[in-house]
Length: 189
Image 1 (tube, rainbow, N blue to C red):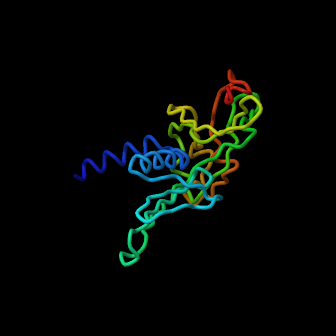
Image 2 (spheres, rainbow, N blue to C red):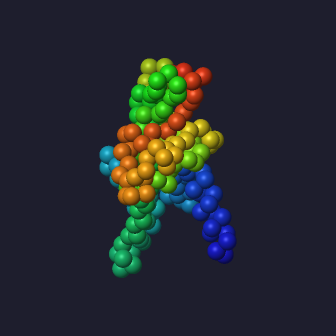
Image 3 (tube, one colour):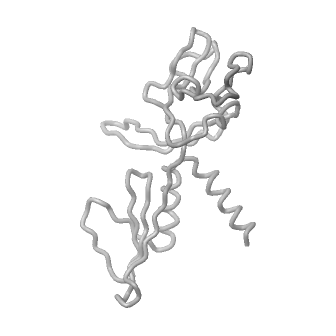
């Protein structure tokens, strides 16, 4: 039983690299189990015995069921916390450094342990807003391949790193995106 639960959790984490992906997946699973989506800003028509869910900003979800009798407690509510520490790519993402390489302009989100992000292959996933014809829509993106890395400095370039170094997220944790053969605009393409 525990192996099956672990496999399901691992699959969920692989399929849901962001809160937006997690909420989309949870909403699908709720609907497959008889839950009806209701809109937060509309009047709710909820019925005894009904199962409902609501999302906010496509990054959080609340599901609830209404009891059939007031003696049974009335209702059950489940809520999830779906965000987690990450780096968010800023609108003007590419930073050209001395015509040698490109970094992505990011901002850290959430309480993170900065050092755990260094020297490992990272990908890009999230929600983007695109213009289709005359209106804007949101789309989920999951590139699911090694694309960037946040390099750490060699110890001789930062001798104080083992003495409780305070990382500056705007300087020390910008991901390396490309080399001198890369050019601005490659990230959006």
